[in-house]
Length: 114
Image (tube, rainbow, N blue to C red; front, side, top):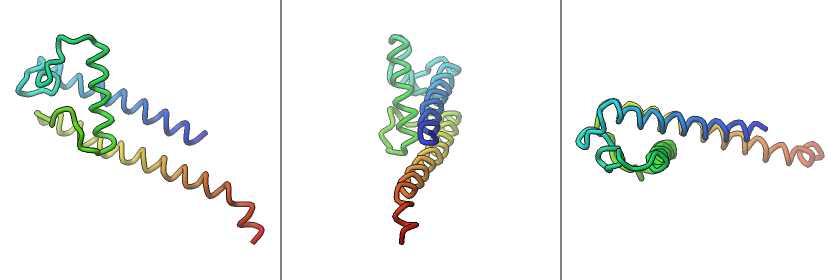
């Protein structure tokens, strides 16, 4: 149950992060020189495509894989990217810890026997 809760937390955080990343671009009127949405020309694409790119960008930050859609172009985007990387690393560390604890609990009967 704890692993599912952490998985849901990751999905929820990715959604919030994607919305904040898109909002930061929208507040700057999708300027191509100052926002990732304008840089990629997404402002006139369907909302589903915009959301897909925003979620992809959020997961790229959370996983710290360096496969970003576009580098941060404003101070707000730098702050959001940094927060996304830190919180993403913390969430994934929680998942690894939960999986490790679960695997150890599966082996507890044999550990008690010895």
